[in-house]
Length: 292
Image (tube, rainbow, N blue to C red; front, top):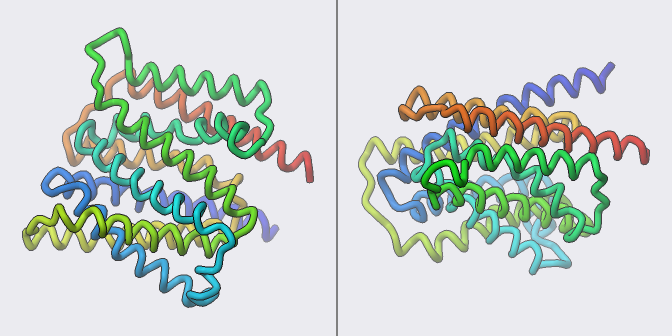
């Protein structure tokens, strides 16, 4: 009974997490449309790093959180995620929230496809079929050959690839390091890298936009806190399918606030991608339970 209650709580926490992250994406789209993307992400990382260090100090201590036998892997993860965030925010500016998120939802399929060559995991024919169906959905969204192809459409796809690689590197790092250690390096390395790059693109901001920047920082920390709480009370495999709600929330925000439109091909393609992604998650869960 307790497990069911915890799973239900985890689902609601995941729904709240996706909503907060969608709001964060909307604010990022606004600010990056007015100021340099690197500067926006840099300031966001300053607050995120402070949050990460506060969590680490409370849970295990900074020294324990920073202890790792694979610093190269952890640093690479941090740099990779910071780069991915910059690319995705750029996609919001170039394509909007609707189309960017529709393409980005392919990242779980990329994780499944790359888990074999990178982590040595076995991917069965059912999941390969789902991966193929999912990428048919991506092609429906991009519509190559049916219209003048937008090179900008490759930006969220590149972001999805980098996030998938980040997820795989996180799983690889988890073989030796705790989640607290990986979380610590995610925030601190990203902040260092973004400061080294973003400080050269500093632009003066208006008072109202500093307010939006403050909200962006708070939503970033709140989203990660909710995600941590989600995985504290429920198994990742049980709640992960609900992460796709971020597409729904972000698309709604893009349409209602930014005046974006939902084209038929984006809706149909995204539906295929989400269905394939949920199937691969369920197959992975069934496989894990079968081994248990």
